[in-house]
Image (cartoon, rainbow, N blue to C red; front, top):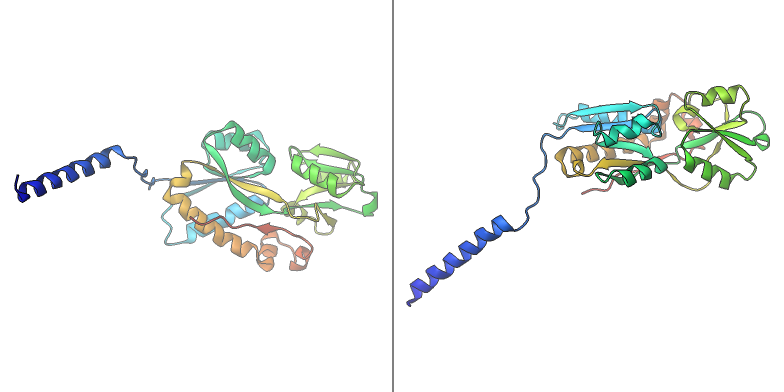
Length: 261
């Protein structure tokens, strides 16, 4: 066999092997170019974050992604959990307890990253030393655990709907209440204690696993981090909450960035 025949046979063999690998070896799945960002958040600080993201995504001329939003009264409600399970949304903000419960019962979603820290405060009127019974939004088990550990003086907790918690405090049914900072901002004349002296996670981002692989999620993540940057500016956050910047001085709320690709 001459040298030319040897070269031809070798090249044919390499070509055949290359074509075989192209068909047999696993390939990275193409990103879904038609994916839509469908966000969900409660009527709380996570909802404010969601609206900031949506506004920025829609106002970004470079963003070609369609953005939808879904607001639910409380992330602990059945409708909030149903929204993610039924794929009504593919990105949602949930408290730790509900996020953990959701991912345990839905293999298609995952906790992507923490989103908001220290979003709750304890509101009360009068003498703090006399606050023994606290109202709390239904389902917020983490808040109860944190408050009980931080303040041994608290003797009991009353679970109340989000709509009714302010009424119960005004009516004297409870001595104080654990409030999301957006609700506390509505009654700035109250006195406030931090829920904890230590940092804790209030909300996490739960996402559909398939959606994480899309271009739309990449755009969402970038805009999310832009929104977080401005909301961490006290003057800007105070404007959104419609309070004086000084009201936020003793509040420890912090919005967290998402990891880059």
